[in-house]
Image (tube, rainbow, N blue to C red):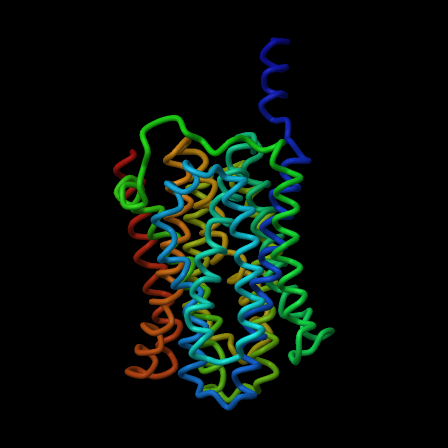
Length: 389
């Protein structure tokens, strides 16, 4: 009994220093990346660039995520996780310097693409490290904490523009310093994190898609849900006569729910299991789609969008937890790369598809598109549960 208790305590022990370093690395990177989207859009708007070109320019970064994802497993094996992360931090900083020097929308297209290419390995490596060092009994709350802090990092980036403004080098210097800080944090934390796993048969991104198609669709759903709501909620609200200030506040409430609720959902996953918790998140998303037209002009819209933000991103958090539960070694690296690839696809496909639905059937195409996504994922989860049973 005593030996079992000792083993259990050892398994549940959390390497806080290593964990804090890994989370700090990706959070600082998120701050820098979160700053670049609005900063570059503001600059292009001042240059009287068309909205179509501004949107195309912004799409280059997720396109970089998609393009780089297949190469990350092999690069991590060849260079090692720490070296690859440090290299990507330096290259991201140099890319942002080039963007600051050459403020032209056409030059920015390839540079923003490269920014996505250099950012993606850092997220994949950090998540692989975090899943590897997190004790299984604490995986839910730690991955929830990770998701919450990284979401907060993305929110801090745009907020920093309120202090620096959007003109000249000051906002760029914050991003450049944040990218370089990532490299220094990785150098400091590298001795405390495990080597990138090499055991087992090397798994490619495509091979992982075959191994876990349901997880991939869950990540796709989470990405598409978030991007559809963030990009088209203003159109939906305007069609219902809502003021832009109220719509912006509702979007902020959605993002707040995204950041705040992940720790709670992680604790729920530890008690009920990540599969059940994911099913709850999906059903809650579907309920929100059904309720949205009924409560949009009532006070209930505020708790609705807050919970919506939490449960929609909770699908991704539960996917990360399941990734750690089911895979190790090279499959874990490939899985994180596949997550990044699928997130990029979901982010790029979701908004145009929902926008087309709204164009064809009116503003209610927004909740209908989100509801359809939720229904399909719920159906796949139910079918997988029956097969498992």
